[in-house]
Length: 224
Ligand SMILES: C[S@@+](CC[C@H](N)C(=O)[O-])C[C@H]1O[C@@H](n2cnc3c(N)ncnc32)[C@H](O)[C@@H]1O
Image 1 (cartoon, rainbow, N blue to C red):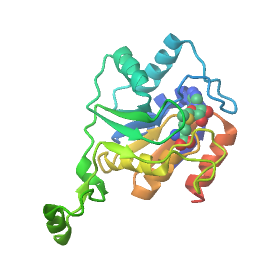
Image 2: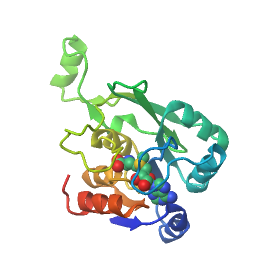
Image 3: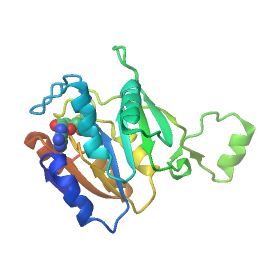
Image 4: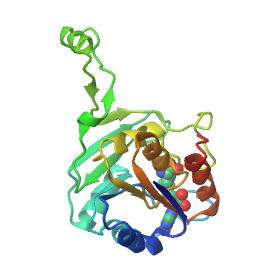
């Protein structure tokens, strides 16, 4: 099941919670950073207290949620919401800027690392050779080195801060099977593509019409 909505998430989330009250909803989002990012229509520069209040209105609604952000912003959000994450993972990437990692904080849900396999790191270790022979896979660790989406990347759309599909697949893949994933700040729809590929139901909301069309094309038509 996939439902895509063009609009302000704050106007839709109450109704969606009512509509899907029989489902285990998890909000998963790479939220606006509030650093004056050059989005097409959304102005990414709220006073800090308004920004935190806006995130509180979106996420503090009695369901589990996962937020991707810079670490210090995650501390501020967690402190504002009076909540501690159950687990935090790091997404690390090479870049020419001072920022080389973002964190993924899981709130009120325990990610199951055994659900996502990754290649073993030490292929010469006898124990690993034995495990590979036995057909055992390596569970995902909590530090992911994955390139950012670059202009030359195959998956690149016109959205200025698209998440790599691999990062979103790691996150979604750690969540309980059968959950309904809602991304209130959908952007180009990467969370939706990850959900579709991994077989999770998905609802996405995006305020900008141009980005909404990109996400619709990526998720519904499979053009990614
Ligand atoms: C960090 S981007 C998400 C990028 C996305 N993860 C991707 O891979 O493309 C945040 C998005 O939130 C959208 N946005 C901002 N405020 C919103 C609101 N109130 N409701 C819905 N979308 C909103 C912005 O237009 C922007 O596309």
